[in-house]
Image 1 (cartoon, rainbow, N blue to C red):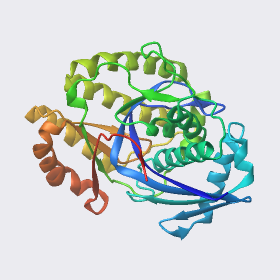
Image 2 (image 1 turned 180 degrees about the vertical axis):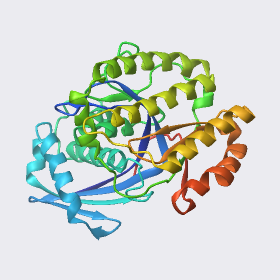
Image 3 (image 1 turned 120 degrees about the vertical axis):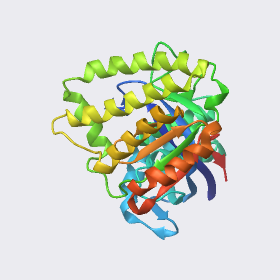
Image 4 (image 1 turned 90 degrees about the vertical axis):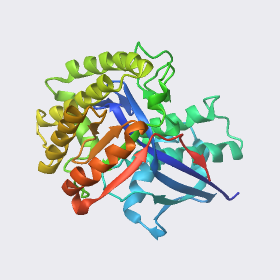
Length: 339
């Protein structure tokens, strides 16, 4: 039996950061993210009788990606033993530059997980979860923790925490509480300060939390921040929301700088951008803020209502700090689309 399935799945940007994990790919603290729209991966997975994995990136065979896909298949086979009888060809395309600091593992592995769930249903394999999307979230998590959140649109939670009923370390779920309309179309402009390979991989970065002197305080802080976001998202007060988002981003980088070994992932232009955003917000009263992943690039966040003035600021003030003036305009998206 030969079959092909395709999904377009988005990346996401965490507002409360997942940093630290335990086996098997379970988070040390809860997280919440905005699912993005323009930054996505389109993946077609072809299954045919046999064994082995082939990966095409932008139509070009890319053997360097094969071990990651083989590892993913190995991790999910206890839930999908039928995969042992199939050769897998993954044909994938990212809408954003590779090594740009956008989480391609989140979009790529969530898309592949959705393809696997479709294929499982086609071969008559009974899913362990009644909800196929939840099954896809579990599978995606086993490939990349943040990928568990990319199978849904909007605001998504991963990790068990008291303020989110039904939350789990094993899968993500859409944020279940009231969300003010201002957050439904929030904008995210990614300023590309550094487009090279990261100084430390996410896996290595998470491992640093195992012996970090501030680990327990950080994990407790994440739970406190998740509860605070529940109120902020309902109220629609953007300024305290941005303040908390920024605190989370700076905490992540503070953890990296105080780990052993330590890493400084920001670049000088990262700091120029952060200071410019805060100065612009203070001087103009514009609701605009930032977050960061574990890298140098800056996600500039603002509500749709101020897009015109915010983009003028991005173009005139922030873009000169980007590598070759490059940035990606994005916003909150609706989640994966079947191809």
